[in-house]
Length: 47
Image (tube, rainbow, N blue to C red):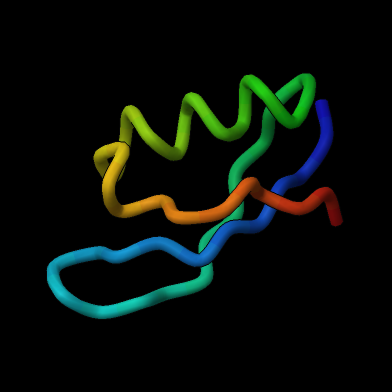
């Protein structure tokens, strides 16, 4: 598992958050599932 960071909109605030996923595509889908697709404007970056 790898760490991925993304800036997401959570309750009107832009925050930087981290999660673990196997690849970038999976991380992006997880961020979208958690925060909503419109709240994740960019691909996550691997740390």
